[in-house]
Image 1 (spheres, helix red, strand yellow):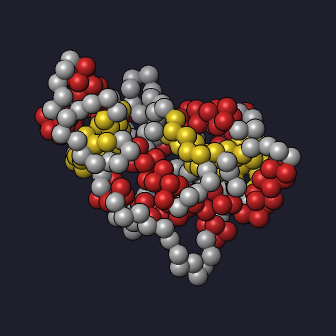
Image 2 (cartoon, one colour):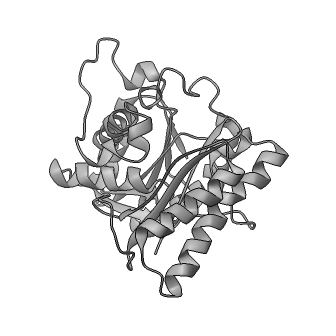
Image 3 (cartoon, one colour):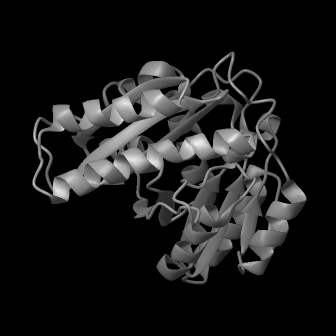
Length: 278
């Protein structure tokens, strides 16, 4: 497994692979890897001959009072996990390598990124899109794999690729959960034992809504109100509970196959997100 610390080294490696007629997939991550990330790596292996994983905690997607400094990091463990998965290269730059000191350009999406998490984290998606586009350009990837747990992120990246004619195929990978249903997240390490039990409310509320849908209840307003009520009992604060089109993120009045039910709520001091695609 190659460890690339500079943009130039990764670009040169990818160029050599392409000259040999090999395809390249990238899995962008912020490290502190778990089984959800590794499932993306395995899917990437099915989509391309070579797999690159980025391990980079991107400072530009964190707001002033968010957890950039505290975000969990364990590079040695991450590299060991990726080596065991047969990853071809890891891209692990410093912020200084990734961004010039006088950088003045960022990428802004004007619609999909303004709702849901974007309404509460106004600079987040500009940071996400900017770093993702840079990763695409540096890695020269043919395919990129993202988890459906971050459903809004996936939709915004798909829109960027479409609107800017970026020659990368975007693949969405299934959400991975613990045995008890909690969606895997690096931020789960912030949860105390008691908070972790309360965090199950997100999955349980979404599961109940899915069961109601299967029973023929399709009023989106009633579904989201029921979800929000359930979350309010277990969580400190509910940022949102929405029913939207999975591609456009437009609200829907009637639940249907392909509707995305998505939530964001605070458990203790930890903000968690989860979703179900009906």
